[in-house]
Length: 185
Length: 224
Image (cartoon, rainbow over all chains, first blue to last red):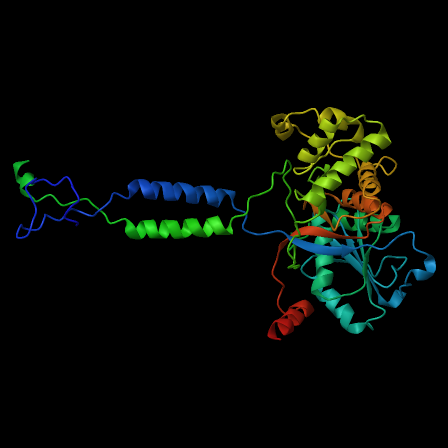
């Protein structure tokens, strides 16, 4: 400690050469208020922070008014139609729907990927097209999950199309007797 | 008691330095990592996707729909966003004869950050609300259910007319997990009708499942 500083020392006698060193003062500081403040700020930031920054998922939709010649014609053999319904139900059929509905199958969000990959492996790439048809009760999450599934399986051609009344009836008939599907992914 | 008093009193002092160090380390982490949530009047639970592209922040026009199917439009806070909000309000006022004053239009720009979800005919009354009232006011949403009266179409049309056909750089769609498909379809219909064919859905990040084609592609890319 500097000799000139007039610290409030207990003795009060003169300092100088030969005088014994001042008694060392305790350098401990009470940190409790600082800790209090620190944690207050931490709590504040923890509550206000948004950890996961939202991501952008690109989506391009076709122009419905485009001329018919410009529209690419889908081969029935390469078509794979996925139908989405309430409570994460997924149905699918390959090619065209049989009049008796025999190729109409029920699935869920876990198993549909295997089906898509199987279809992808068995079909020439230029013919493969996945048609997604959500019905009135399907939720936005289902649609995005399905679009995401296209990215995951790297299927380049897919379309979201309005559902046909015949398909709606078929879903209704299936759901009438089927147990609820397990939740989405 | 006399016996107890003989035990030398130990100091209760604890060295808190290490504690303070940790506390401030965590504090600085949160301060740097934090990004304040923009004020939103509506709670939206986004679906997940494997897309890893970050959400853009400049020149954003955002359409949100919540669980109940209420549709909102909002603009980013940067100059482009404000400009476009202003143009939308001006054109909408002119086209629909709303008679918005410059003060109303300024309010529109202010509210547009958090989201505007009222039918066109109620816009004038809505813009008379104070900031406090705006926060507590339950907006009915822009009607989209009816194809003939899809008012999102009016908002989009006003925006594009105002900019002379120049589309916002980032058209975002912020949808809730639980919204049923028809609302999404109607929003898409309004987009298509106004020539917006490319836009981005706001999603939260999800890992790519192992063994899938995309997983393999991403792995190869990361090797390079």
